[in-house]
Length: 222
Length: 222
Image 1 (cartoon, rainbow over the protein chains, first blue to last red):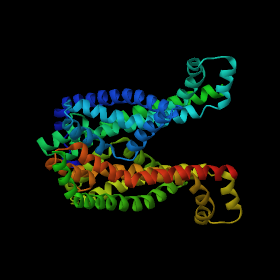
Image 2: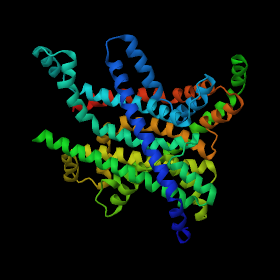
Image 3: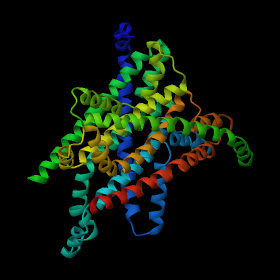
Image 4: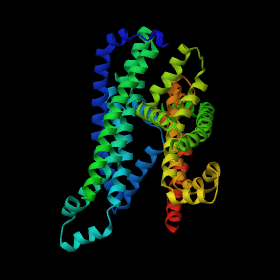
């Protein structure tokens, strides 16, 4: 295989790969932002005192966590039109990724919020801080510091999961590999190039996560 | 119209159960083999053997950094170029086994590293061989840390098994995809698919949560 590994064809398809790499980046970037918002809301609902809120959030999180993403993507892709909602594949894909990742992020944020000891919140109450001030000055700064590494881990998972969007014919990295395979019948060149580009994103995010963790440890010891 | 489609869906329930059996077969087989390989790799990863830990570490990183969909395409499309012809089912099991082994390897390595050094030193001092140290001293204690995330990982892998539908293995997701071509009610069809996955995954998630609670209690009691 390696004897016939054709770099010229890869070079020829490079513009397509770059376009698709960019598509993967913006699709996942948008989904990560959406998932952060959905996750924060779901987490706030789960931790609230109202039982109906807790129930809704719990239902959402558990049903997302026990079904595969691909089934969720198909659910929206085939299901929304039968409800009369017609939206483009990209929006369907981003919505599916957002809803999926939001459930996991809700759990991560919840773990971060719960890791703050009750005494700190009580001290905040004793000092006379209001709920929003307690959140802003005591809970969130500590919770965010501890949750950034797992959130970046979830971001890595999301970027990899975005490969599934190629199955509903969105032009992203994996789709580029499929296109090249079907046009030139060179699966080795096509999918190995795809894999290398994914690895590139993975290592950047991993480096970011490690750098943050080091910073965190440094801050805690100093 | 809904009633008509519902009747059609009820008629194709046996088809779905067949797909469910395929999902169970693919993920069951991969999980069993993957767990065995994962434990072996994990033990080697923290051993003092030359080169092998580095190679396994790099391999795990590559597998964790690329989407499973791309891996499965590589196995399915590139192996034939090397002269290895695989049907869809063995290709799916091979790819999923490798994925399982990589994730389990990391969990096992983490668990072994969490056992205090003194335990190993005490075992060496008592004259136990390397093998007996592992089986009688290190692993029984590491299991406490390994087990909860291991069950959680099983859930993730069962969900990942839905991706094998992309190369034509008729698992539940693919059955849903085939059915939705005849019964254009995506919500109903993929709702059923989701329920079938939920039935497998939700109990496992509960087991993982219970294990986590019980094991941390056991660990603190030490």
